[in-house]
Length: 392
Image (cartoon, rainbow, N blue to C red; front, side, top):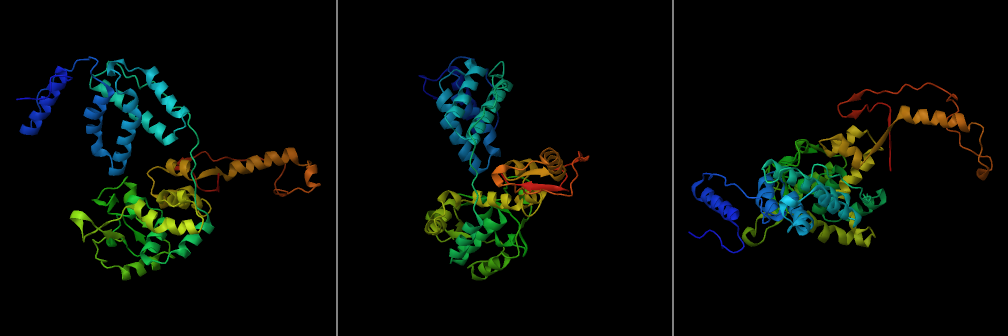
C-alpha cells in the first residue's frame, strides 16, 4: 500500500503518516515511532502537524482564524526552513525584536511571543528538542496601541439618525450594554429577561455555537439600562419570530440555508447599515466597531462607578483586564497625600504668568498631616472605598 511519495519524504514522516492511517482505519493508536533529529524536521512541520492539531480544539472560531493566520504569516514564513533542532534563543529573540522594530502592534508581537514559547516548550516535552530555546526569550517593548472611544455627541448623533427599529435595537445593545460582537449576534429571545440579556451561545461568521462563550464570567447576565429596555420590547413586537429559541437579530440564509433565519455577520451589519450613516455624520469609520462600543462603555463607567462596577458590566474574568484596558484608578488617600505635600511647598508661591491669580486646592487642608494609607487588598484589587477614577 502506497503511503506517500518517496521523494522528499524521510522515513520518520512516512512512519508518522502510516500511524495516522492506522488510527483512522482502526481507531487504535499505533506505536509511536522514534523520530530522528535530522534537518527535515522544521518548525513548519511541528506547527502544522503537532501544535495546531493539539490546541485548536480549545480555540474559538474567531481566535482559531486569527491565530492560524499569525502562525502562518509571521512565524512559519520566517522560521519554516530552519531545522527545528537548530532553533536557539538568540534566533527567536532577534525575530521577536524584529517584529517590534517593524512597528507591529503589541497584540501581534505578544501573540507571536506566546506562540513560540508554547511551541518550543511542547517540542521539548515531546522530546523533539533537548532544551527549550523559548524559555529565555523576553517580550520586547512595542509601540503604543491607540484605543479610541466614541464621544457622547457621536453616540447621540448616531442613535438619533437610525430609523430602522432592528438596527436601533442592535446598536443600542452594543453601545449601552457592551457585549462582544459574537455575543450580541448570538442572542436569542430567551436571553431577554426584561432587565438583562443572558447569553446562551455565540455567533461567528453566520454560524451559531450553542453554549460556547469566551470565559465562565461571560455567561453572566448582561445588564440592560432602563432607557434601552423599551427599545428591545419594541423590536420584539415587530420581530417576525420572537419564540424563545429564535435569534434576536437574524438575517436570511443563503445557499443551503436559503430561507432560514441565521446569525448576522457583525462586520457586514456595521459596514452595510451603520457606517454609511456614520459617514454622513462625519464619524470616523474606525469608531464603528463593537470593540470600540465596548471600550467606550468601560471608559465612561469610570465616571459613574468603581473599577469593580466596570468589571461586572463587561464581565471580565480578571479585574486586571478591566484596569489595564479601560480604567486607571488612584486611591483618594494617595491623591490627598500628594495634594498636601504640594501645597506645603507651594503655599506662598504665585505664578506671575497668571497675574497673581491662583486656584486654591483646599484651604481647609493643613500644611502637614499624617495620611493613613490602606494597604489591605480584597480579592479583586485595591479596596474600592475612597477611590477616585481618572481618565488617561
